[in-house]
Image (cartoon, rainbow, N blue to C red):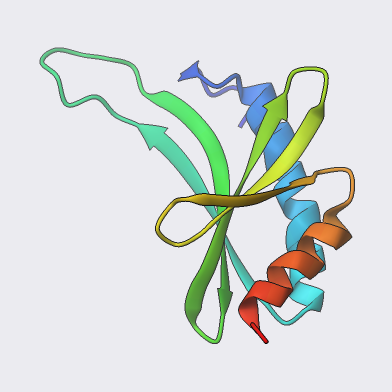
Length: 115
């Protein structure tokens, strides 16, 4: 998808975010959770032509056929990439370094089976 011309998020950054989500997906699947990658594109509904805007990719995480969290990757200046975990209502609840997907997967799996 590197030939995709879009405004908004640079395609190179989106590809890095996809890779980070893919690493997390592998860890989550080892916990028995199902994941669905989601590509987000904003299309303007105003008059005239406006180019599509690429939004950061996300990943929905399911346990027992119910959505438990949505994960997106955010870049923190001088802080690297982080997995931002959001509840199904969209409120962010925690963040984990993208450098350690196994700890993020463990925390997300704990949300699937609350004590």
